[in-house]
Image (tube, rainbow, N blue to C red; front, side):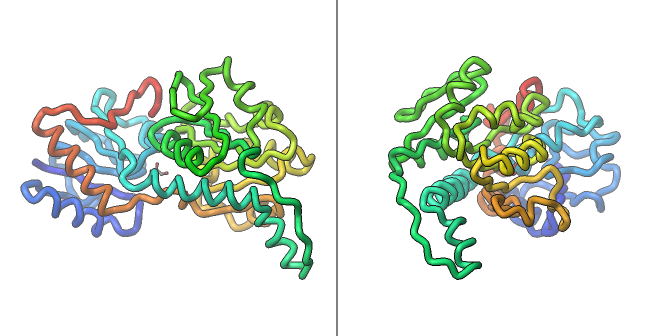
Length: 307
Ligand code: GLV
């Protein structure tokens, strides 16, 4: 079996070595060194334009959860199955990130950080956890895990998904019809949607205006889901109390971007869930093995849905 390996990350060779150790019987080529040879499968992450030109694979394995970058490539072979990473250590990181965001906001931590800059000693009123409702948008594998985790912490949790979902202890809403009801009582909105043509720009003024005054936004799906000017307006008008952004329309976020210096915005560099290479390569090796044996493989992308 021949594998073509490509990664936009700096340590591509190290990742390839990890995968090669899991699949000793396979032959690996690291793109772009590999010539025009035929490969059975591609393992890739954000392949540059031209990667698929003239190539055919039996399957493509995406080294991440989101396949938006892959699906945008006009040369992506139309019928080739694409498999994504499922959890592989990302769910736990997202649980931690959102729990930290929720506790930080609940306990006014960003206000205290700003107060410290002014040497200001001022206690704010405590807010009980049970009155602080968190809304998770996107109840896929990762969204469900985060929803369950926050529920176990004692937060009231609500979730919204394109199609119906049922999660014990979590109030779930679905589709266009359920969106307004979901938003009206959401004090902290966590966007975990995949990026698709429908979700691009979904975090816009019309949606954010339906959150109660003083709500907080956590954006951990993809940057292009957020309409930047609308967020800035909502913060300036006081409708939103703050935002924690982990994903940006352009990554890395340019140094002169307004988000870096906005007093109500916290920026993190796309770390809410990082790809853990050991776990990810183990999972991809299992998926490749199963695929080559003709077994069914989970994590298959539905191209019509875009995730
Ligand atoms: C990270 O953003 C991923 O899609 O895995």
